[in-house]
Length: 343
Ligand SMILES: [Zn+2]
Image 1 (cartoon, rainbow, N blue to C red):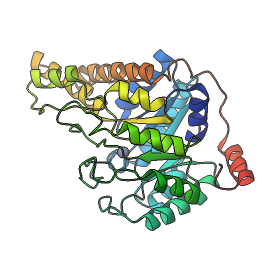
Image 2: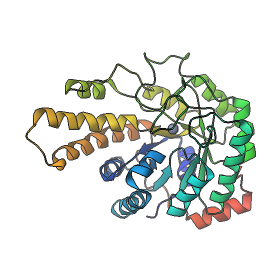
Image 3: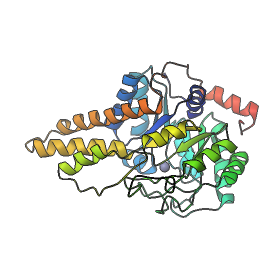
Image 4: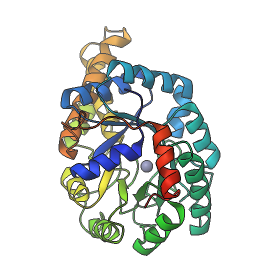
């Protein structure tokens, strides 16, 4: 089936009461790992590429790898989404390339690190909503700032520095018409999210629930939501790695989020840990190996495993066959009928 819009995928997730993981990719092996996990668990899929990833792999390669994925895994509804667009121009290039959803992160200025004003955020996000919806493409916005830096993107702040204000979130959705909203509730990008298991003081799930109560029909997005499992950290460190002890977002907190309007959960670090651990193991145990396939194959398998587990935990497993794709042209028509803000 063709690539589908994020909006359709999340509307279906909302009806079914489940969440959908959005997994970051940079290359063929990672795309294959996600698609294999989706086939195994019969899950709809969101594949996302950061600006760093788009620069690393080149849009054409990414897009055509994804087209290959939709041919080989024709039974899986699949979304191709750019993570943290820093400007309307970046989003426009993704839409023109054929991405079926975009993220305009106007919570930061175009430099990708300076926190912006509410007015700036509304202005750039609104501009992207108009451009994207005219072509049936979904828009994710962000209000409040995530902690940490990843792929050169982020304010580098503590996850608690710019939490989402629930009333501002309502106003933001109202003024922009975004389909999905990323919120800051204490999570951070990268591997080092929490220096001990998070509590209500560091991971503000009560804030998330309040936002959902005020915006019951908006699809919420949790960024920085790798769980950073200890067993994956241990494999890396056992085979010569030097990760410092760290804690991610516990799956049970994500599941609480899913009960409260979270439909998209961004996961990148867990895949990175799984792949790196598998590669280190091959290097340590078989130093005579020099064929890249000897370590990329187990790396791909390790990523597939952690993703299949997340797909099951998020509840998306078993839902790949629930619906037929709505074309982007039809989505565009629907946006035009309801006004750009489809709420
Ligand atoms: Zn993010």
